[in-house]
Image (cartoon, rainbow, N blue to C red):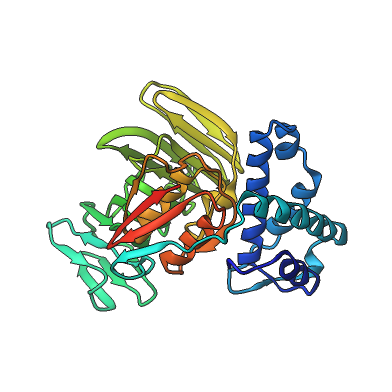
Length: 391
């Protein structure tokens, strides 16, 4: 990555062989350009918000959502957008190399080895208190009783099956992912939940006919099954109680929809992003908000706001990607949770450095750090499972 030259990137675009890694470099260079414009006070607002070249390049990238191992086909990008990319790359390459005459150094691993990415890993706590390590449990039926069976599949899923007409217990189960883990569970009603690292979901083994209720900490993506009450006159609502730092934070009420909730305790806000359907977000202060698709509710303290959502960023983790359109500190919180590392900052570390681009979550941490370090404004040192950030 560090040896890529502007000519290589131009050739890749013209040949239709631009990888996601190259696209990531485009975003990184663009943000470097924007930051330099801000530092020199040269129409920063124009550069960032009204740069038509970048808007078209970025849109072309968004329209081609492919895994990092695949290529972006030239036919999906307009000719003039490619020309704009070439012009931008040429100008940015000058800015990039003016910043430092020295090549960007790779990060330092002073103790230990490179760190592998997270994996499908979780613990299931049954109603009787038994704790099952799903990483080590054999595939197949984990529990079968009273019309209920719990099955672990080979592709990292936990599936609840219920038999109609048989009595079922509605005692709670909890699935919890560790740092560096993720898991998917299919609930008794057929709803699907994907849990990100360091998250947990508590739910009954059988839902009531009047309301389906679960509790979430951390981050989860939900695809809720549309179920009618026995009378056939009303939909059974699905309610997600969101916990943050051990306290009730908000409730999200849905009927049948797709949405993501990020409620990590180390994040400054709780973000609920709606992709499909409709949800109502309620908070203890009695404030509420109704979301439409492509909107997000942001809760900070007791203030609840609704704004347009960047669904690509919200769904990146579930799609196996990192998409960086944020500051360094925010990006490193994601990295820390997925790779199971501690991140510490030296006084010189540029926590507010804006990042751009995307990378696969299936790569070792070295690939992620090399990408971020390619800005030339930050340096990383790995000591065991600790990442030290400096200027």
